Length: 115
Length: 115
Image 1: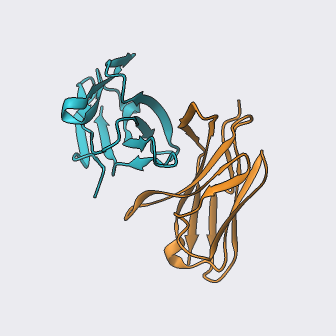
Image 2: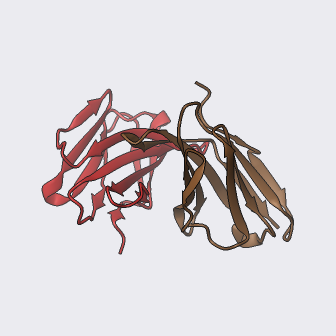
């Protein structure tokens, strides 16, 4: 069963709009970690954030913010005032404490920011 | 820090040939991961090492694939013989220590095309 669902295959917005990328996960572990990675057109994977299951505080880093809600098993990512350089594929991932540290990846959301 | 280094960046080879992909992890990182990314299957973990020792190779697709880590600063992924279905982007990632294990830093990838 898929454990990380990114239902949005592709999102296209105009520059300066806010955009939220959804991530829903499934796990039976009480200890787990959630991640977001960015894959720009150049192809490399860039680590953005890690959140552990005991820390439901939302996080803000510049124009990026993350909303972790255990009640809905979601870990959504919002970009405020989007820029063309934000265009990339964004992956959400889950690692369960008993999983030998494997990252379970979502299918990714392709974000297109139009000038 | 130089980041994770992979070579070659692009490899085109004919079916049946041996292919060797190389990775230099971030200095001081003691975990190393090999992933494969395709459109059909997304990101797949192939194998990972801790202190140069293979820990989990359950993701290695078949016996044609092998990976080694002779020392802390070098790893190889070999495919012999290669097949067209092996065409993919292969990523190497590294991470530091148990507490920060989940934060994996990726190399730029090797795009392999088998004709």
